[in-house]
Image 1 (tube, rainbow, N blue to C red):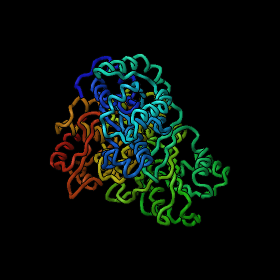
Image 2 (cartoon, rainbow, N blue to C red):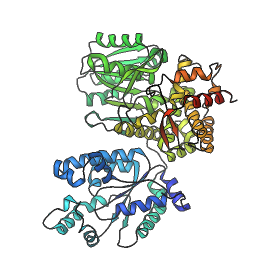
Image 3 (cartoon, one colour):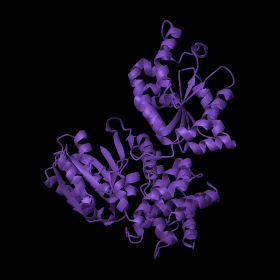
Image 4 (cartoon, rainbow, N blue to C red):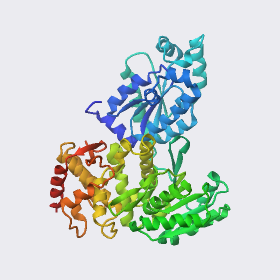
Length: 565
């Protein structure tokens, strides 16, 4: 990748607003060669979808076709494309048949700008004639097969956002043509308006599920549940505040669709994530005569979702589970991915299970009554996704955060992007054996602070702990030489601009020393064989897992942090 991007290319990347450029077209149209050069010109990563499919399968594409057939290949192709599109902005070369799948075209429309490399049959025939890795052309008359494919696929390729003729000659000629088309068309293609409703798919094979984001989803939850789980009953777990605000609308919707339901109401706040409340919730679900095929519905924020999800994973050895998150933090983070847990006196979320929901309904209307402090705290988790692996998303947030806080349509886009980022990670690493740990950016610091405060929400709520944690992680990364100080300062500046704390010293009445913080950190779930693990940064959008971090370095850093004004 080039270290410098020319001004026109930089302008195109900004206008893309985080979308990928997706090259589609027939085999031999030059998608891989042109894509690599285009990515270099734009300063973006390049990925060839066919190479990713082969890596995932551990076989070449001809081997996949030979052993498992085309249908098996197409299903894998669809899932790989969904993952690649949701992960981050990039230039993506697709296989010749990928764009023929309706779901893939819809995913490309949501996450990218499609460019058809349109080459005539003679050019294509010359390019593919000597290649042996095209199983579709293993026929008695490959050129005739190629012509038929062009006739069949041409009308679908024509649905791409842009079309560029792929001719024999230098790749830069085609690249320049693409850049010209993008420069002239992005204002039209990337609408300034953002959607008012969106759906994100969490791809987990037979346990895949949708996250639906938009208005009035609490009131319409009965319709969604009845469609997915006909004749099922529901045990609704919520807290006292939400029972007053949102439970009546949910119950009316369930009644309208003939769904039997019971309510289980807990005390609001983090202290409810404990053994005694968990036991009561489990007993109440059983007392309501809920069967294994029935549903546990979590109506609330992260506390309700974590507690209800753990109960669903446990009662009758596993019931179906629906998340209806009502806080911003829960909508972008805790309701997605299947982490369920309660707290121990030794630390946060140390007792739980990985247990995926069957459906997530993120009602943005519920955020209208969310206290400003809780909304800001949830926004810290959104910022986290930009810092992990999506610098353009972080840039977008620094420009649009005020519209997000004003509950404008940008809010749906921020939630959608956050959920899509998490869904992509969860699909790769469901039980945190690898890079899912990146989602804990800032949490080693934040969880330790919460533990020492005994989860006192008057002094610190979880999202504020995350905000302090990501700022600390950025500064610690700079101190260790992984990142530059300017990036750390930029992270802190954005958090403070939004009204979020960015230092341990911002916590009212903080009176714990570095040794106490360090001791709490050693109860973190990422500790392995007594060794500390942190999520650190090489820069904005370039986080990594740092294992075996020296405790003495952590203590020195904490001492400096506690001396900050």
